[in-house]
Image (cartoon, rainbow, N blue to C red; front, side, top):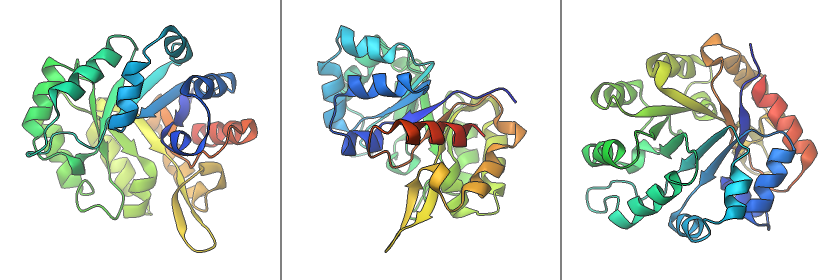
Length: 252
């Protein structure tokens, strides 16, 4: 199996690392990450658009794979994706080579509107994440995935391997979902779970996770050959050793 494209979600990094996005991006690329996912709440999205400058462009350009995780305001019937937010997203698409716009299915009630935005505004880049974590009330059942796949042929998908494990530790859910997604599978979200002193983290680095062997067994399935992998581990510092260990773990 050829080495897959690997990298990091900036969700945890935004919350815990006191540095600029450009410095963080340069650090990740210097340490061999070739994929990145920018997690955008409405404030971050506005900031990204506000600072669409040469430095940001230069910091993102070296990555082979870029995805944007969209804000959780996407297409509720009483709070639909606003034209303002759509314009902000389009402004990013016009500057960066974005491969996927990731959405959570449990936040979407008006699927038809999202499909129209996808076709007319977002160049077909919407990617629905599946499955959701075990605490969500939707986005967990294979039947839901099949319905989205059949009804919205322009949507692609992101498979969350850890959330699949939460719902099915045997690993069948991840493989079954990947078989359904087929060529429409854009990338993987990868993390693990780890028992801490008083709780279980479900977004641990894979290389530190208690269920590391189970997740790696899923990742080794040939169905995931060539699919980019993005770590959603709790990235809390610009630690080159941790980055190297995590990239190695999710590539295995």
